[in-house]
Image 1 (cartoon, rainbow, N blue to C red):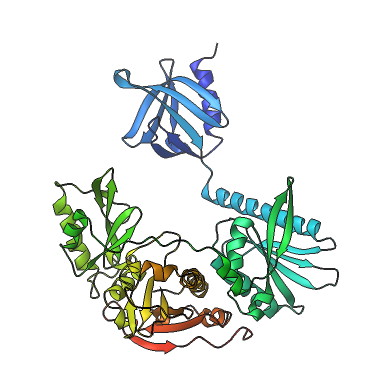
Image 2: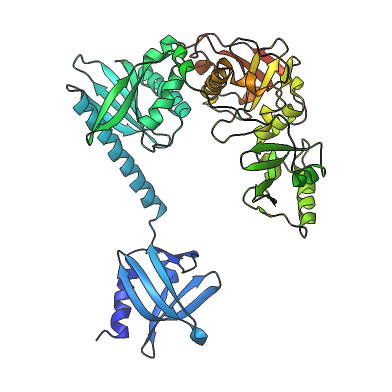
Length: 498
């Protein structure tokens, strides 16, 4: 017969196997625990356990115990006959978890290297490593039969964007050739179809010199066996054979009744962005309320970040108080520039300013009155405008240095240009009766002067001559006044400057 003392010894040994535990209660609540916070003892032949929780430190009698895959399930009873169960799961310390993640990524990097050797006989692996910055990319060096070396880059997290992969590839290639006696001839980006095909479209937007330096290799599986195949570099002309997404935009913009009432509280500072899910209301670019139509009825929520709650007739004063607080802190002369309301969503703040008066950026621009009222999570264009001569303009905004800005803008250009060439923009009547000129769209890259990434010109020099990119430098105090201090036409080809 198992006594309480025997079970006490078994439990202590089980708990001592890990220092950190997670208590999971039946209703889904969890509470992290340390070994020194868990007390177990035998009193009056009853096995008791004590541990902290949401309601402070409490003790229960253990009625039954089940051990399963390092987890401990305790059937407990408390005062006044209350009963419940709690599952204790060992937690992996953060440092150990990080080591495990790094090891798993390194294993994947070695699998890619091994696959290269199988698919390309005679290839010698020189080095396999993860990138130093965050360990999210495999960096492999190989040597062929002719003793020439190539570099291989691959995303071992499978969630990096094509823009991030492409910019990382060129910068790593430059670093390799800057400190090596034997130059690396080219770089391969290896990825699965889901990731490599969008990357191929972005790659096609580069000039011929830049394209030749990076080779795209697709990882595939056939009859259960993995393989690798080169993807031939595409020409821009091949992109226009795609079928564009159909633009479905209303001819008139009508606010919901709830949105109208909220906008009326601060009409000069609140704008509305629409999507398939409903309306998002922003105060100087900061989202603070949402309105949705659910089963024919308007439902609304308000709050900044994750502090949202339903809007009802009883808390309307709380909404007004929130708007007053944003007006106090989210202004150019804020009394506290570190406040959440001031620091959050700076690019949306700049966008909201230009949305109200795009001529602050360029007196020749006319903003689309319809298109810029909508957002799609996967295809966000900051602003779309038309010059007075009919030339379409894509406006990409940044307020802090972003290495991927050039490639993001180029990819936006591709999507909009496909719509323009296939007549979708004209059919949607984005600019009313104004005609869109039959010329490729211009791209305006807009940011405060000191907020352009140091590699902006380098990457801009890689773009195809068909992409007409302009750099607009703003005064640093753009919240107070949007003032263009410099306009620079597409940077000269700087591909070989390093």
